Length: 189
Image (tube, rainbow, N blue to C red; front, side, top):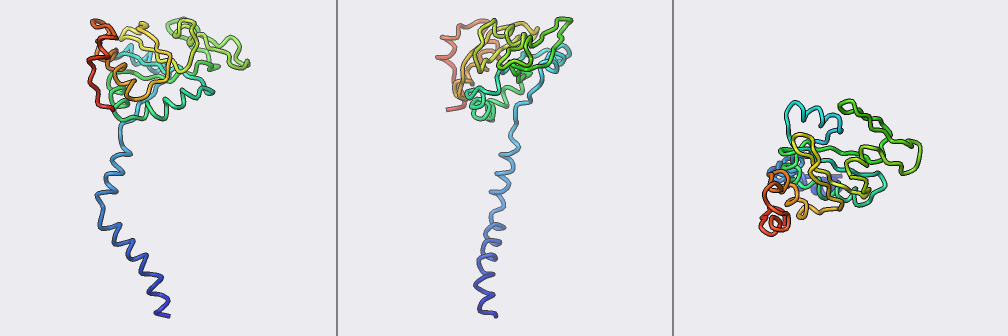
């Protein structure tokens, strides 16, 4: 009986001692999981927060069927450099361009005129995108809630980093984009 028991239990004991000998690796994994994530708000929440404590607003206008929107969610918005900067400088909004709910902002009502229709666009999406519907669309508003610009494209983390700094650091007010992007030195490679 002993001859059978020792070969069976030996690998388990070996694994136990190995795993307890390297507790630092577990700690590193847990700290990586606690990286800051973007705090996403509804449009109404961001609008109310901005009235109390002004900050720029970033709006990711997406649709459920948009593959590039999903890629941006999984690759760009999860990047720790991006998420940390976005959370500090913007109220970030996820806005479904085809949502069915009615929004009322300062007495102005926005609806989806055909809420049961396939791919029917919400009025606020049309307004934010100035009638040019493409997804993903990245809308930037200033601290007063005024439209700065929209970028209609998927952007990888290294392409998105200079964009958020351009608007977040107010460089757009004094420097042309073409000049700014040639001098920007980011963290993401």
